[in-house]
Image 1 (cartoon, rainbow, N blue to C red):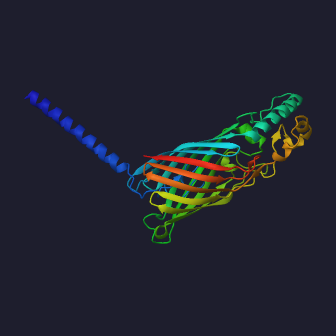
Image 2: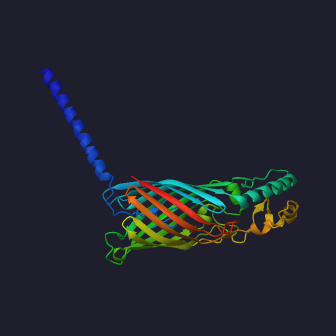
Image 3: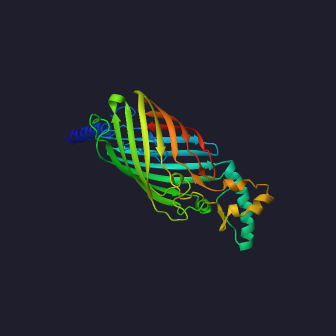
Length: 349
């Protein structure tokens, strides 16, 4: 009798274990799904949110329906004339309602910053000796790098861009980013007010399936300079402003999308000079002349242009997307004419 009880208990435990495994598999199958239409989750923008390349959309990242979650890993590589941007991160969409993301951006600078670094070392050393203290400008003679961490969140407020495409009500979402720039010395040299700050935005996305077209309009509330890569605010303060962003996308076929984007940028540092030890570098003309760099001072005045891009995104399946674009970013701080191609990869799970 005792042995029968033991066998019965073992059988019960085995059955319970099998049931738990089956329940776990069912729960996982229900939790992780990819029920949305191919390409409708968009790609990952450089700040990590689901959308286009440079602007967030109201769509929630991934392919999960309201019954599950779906996430992705994303990487963007943008070699420009004098800069190279690497952006790596992850994002998760919950029940087609809420989105969380984290991205690390790294901007390596080139020839213009290298030359300024040489001048800054010379001028900074001289002014530092006069003041009796070292001056760290954050600009190296070679390979200055700007790193920034970005945490994002987005929530769909109302509307359904995919399944309610037969009406004129767009999908609307609100979201935000918290950005922390790690090169504080450089930001002081460039006269940015802050190294870390938050942004908020509201996006409206409408998909017109009869004409295979998506339209997105975003209003971003921010004080960022070059999306925060050059800090936030300027000598006049760090007041935020509303900046519009627009995306247009056309579905060539079910796995290929083409489009264009525009993002308004600010002028917090417009016309400002690089500063070393309280001195504008453009005021150090004798030093520049002695170094044979008399023509350099004209490139030390900062400007910031609006951003444009034209892209083609390919979705071979729901687990992978590849975006190729030509970015027209104009003036980035002291370096003009920053245009070039970029590649963005996204792996969904």
